Amino acid sequence: MRHLLILLSIVVAASCGNQTSNTSSTSSAPVKQTPTDTLDNLFKIASEAELIDIFGKENVIYDTVYGAEGEESMASILYPNSADQVEIAWSNDNKREGVGSVTHYAFYDSDNDRLITTSRWKTISGVKLGTTLTQLNETNGKPFIFTGFGWDYGGFIMDFQDGKLDKLPISIHINISDFLNESDNDDYNALMGDNEFKSDNPIAVRLNPVVTMIEIWKEE
Image (cartoon, rainbow, N blue to C red; front, side, top):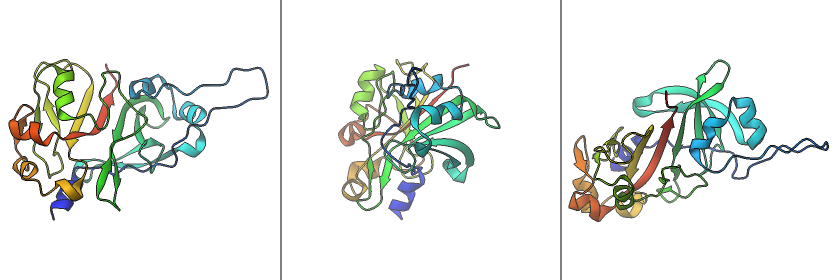
């Protein structure tokens, strides 16, 4: 049951491949290059058509994505079924134009009951999957407040407490990554449930969970 509760807070990402595919041409026209592996740069892409042009048709699908409490929506999925998967929601979903948000989850390895927190992506703020709580404290410059683990909104950072990440259009979830070996940890169990904890809590510091989800949205 504990594993079921843990997995409720994880949207398992799907992806088709780990390699980008640049557009080639026999003419003198310049080859369109892939943007850097920075999530924020995906906002420079105008449409799904351009996304496909840059990354390759084999690496993009349009499909249902799932959020907390079974919420469903449609998005373009880049690198589905891989550790590099990114969900791209469009401001104009009918035309699939204008990136509204990008979401990057740690990929769930069901064979080993763990989250893969290594991927190609990073953010301009320096946060990436696998960034530890200790590193987040340093990046933010202040402790932050997060929700307890083991439910739909578990590990959600609610308040950056006027730190450096507070004004950025970013949402972050943290969790353990190795459920098989860490889910029975006394420190983990002490941070479970619909409660709020500060990241300088000695138990949280000792557990040192990592970033397992990053969402960035378009600034108005």
